[in-house]
Image 1 (cartoon, rainbow, N blue to C red):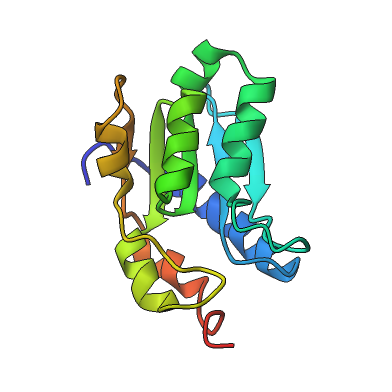
Image 2: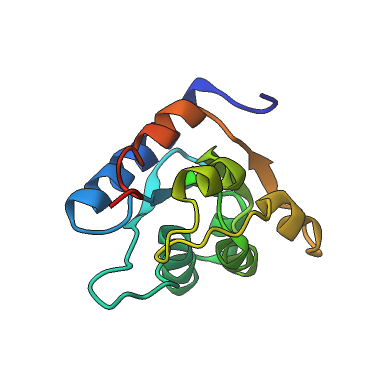
Amino acid sequence: MDGTSERDEQFLRLSFAVASRSLTHGNHPFGCIVVGADGKVLIETENGYMPDHDGTAHAERLAATQACRTLPREVLAAATLYSSAEPCAMCSGAIYWAGIGRVVYGLSEHRLRGITGNHPENPTLDLPCRDVFARGQRPTEVIGPLLEDEAAALHDGVWTK
């Protein structure tokens, strides 16, 4: 894919590790990290659905909120958010409003929908993040899906329970 690098794959795999950890903490297997232009991990967030059944506590939305509260705009503009799965429409909006300049994701929203089906805890929106970002007034670079089979493996057996 255009614009990808070994560094992108390394950080994306780190988001997969965060997603895996999220599952061990009783949450859905989604995770993300925000990395500065210098390669330093600035934020790491797991899915936060439990214990409150908060359907808005997606890892990317939580990361965008934390980013707004803790990082300067110029740092965010040069940062990359690495996500185990493609940011949904809600998360894409949060990423846009936070001003994070670049997104790299593993599992596409379309493929996720095929995995989750109509699970009541994840009624997936099949709306590409590129479509959401394209409506904004500033560009957000998007790379993905990348390492999609590895990302999909995080969901093995999760949505059939």
